Amino acid sequence: ARWRGRSRLPFFCGDLTPRELRVPTQRLNTKHPNGALSIAHLRALAPPSVFAGVASELTEIVGEPPIEAYKDENGVVLVWLLDLPGQVATLWHSQLMLCEPDFESEAESRFVQTHGAGVFEVGMSVDESGGQAALVGYVSWES
Image (tube, rainbow, N blue to C red):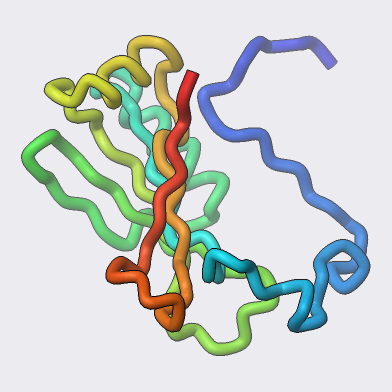
């Protein structure tokens, strides 16, 4: 195989190890002290010049077209639903969002200028019992 350079998409690897051998299932090992339950969303940014190409690649990976497409004040937003491994009831789904960046936001503008298209934000679904006002926490990338 020939090396093709860095992809603009995340690296995906299928693990054939049975889930019960690689993921803790005992309640003591699955409850996080900060109340995190799962990933609520992944928000990727792509500048207009490569947006259609990234959208096509993500559609190929997810295996379905976006369930929602709309324009906000910054540009186009596409949304895909992602299944959670081992999810029995489909009460909600994690979401993958592809957005055109807000070039008036220093963080989004710098991210796209430095990295090009890529995952900008990870939102975590959290337990309400911790008393948090928000049900989604955010992971930010700093350099």
